[in-house]
Length: 83
Figure 1 (cartoon, rainbow, N blue to C red):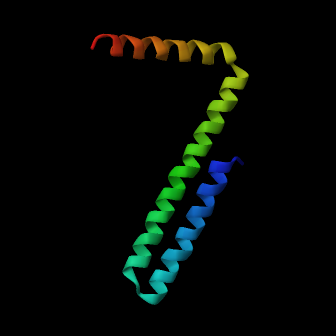
Figure 2: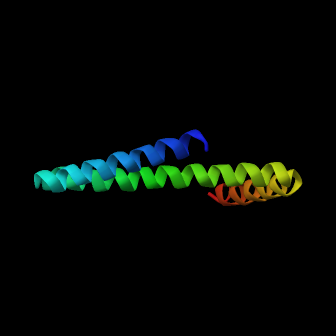
């Protein structure tokens, strides 16, 4: 597990705890903040998983990754060159 995934999962757990504490104390602001922290943690963990899968795909198929990166570069160049 990489850094972004670990941080994201940690934030999710903190959010669950904060939401539970908000429910227990009947503090709606704390409960909403906990839900927001959970969502942010989930996004960060998913980002880490995506980066990891892209890293693995690049290591397994470096030629394909280079071709895709080149194609994206040409596409962006064409879009920006038309201005």
